[in-house]
Length: 256
Image 1 (cartoon, rainbow, N blue to C red):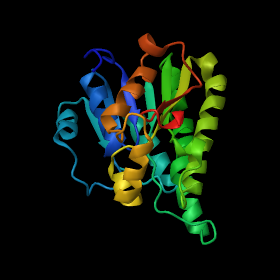
Image 2: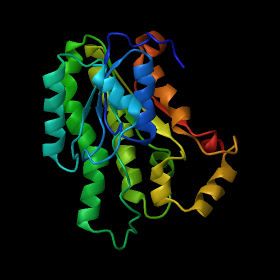
Image 3: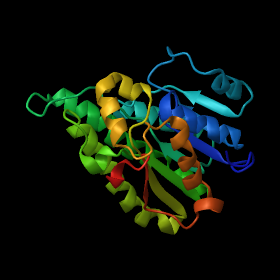
């Protein structure tokens, strides 16, 4: 864990912070002194971990629900953040999912649009909406979640999801060049096969075991394996000369 005051006085916005990697990223930012504005999902039905609600009660966090399935949801989230703070030091674009495995021959327009909207368009919309608050911070960092499948193409039925993550990777590199004069760094974290409910929904136990055997470290990753990379890329003292990069966190899976 990084030092407890690494992000003291800094405001961090995290989307997709209700579970999995995003939840652990929120936990570690809070542990390092940040004020966290967390998008925790589409609705308030989900029970959240005690540490998040406690941080909210203590004024160290603000929790929001929003459906990023269309521009109204992202615009509402941006407006809610702007009501809370005048500047944003760190934006973590982490919200995303695959929705299902859709074979190319039977992919519907609705399925295509849903995957692209959440994983691709919403990233652009939230980033665009919060840019004024990041410019106002003087120096800021954007860290976008992509995926190992952006490089490999993923497994059958994930072509649109994988392509949307490749879009975010390229978008991030372009943003890094464009926003550098504003003091805003842009990087990506690219998780490999991580043990979260994402793979519980979309991958069989047999598939995960076959993948595990291909990983040099001989295990699947965890959110705890991924989260420190987000903090590293967000901290000027640690990564102030790093921008436009994609950091792969996959146990050596791409070595093979």
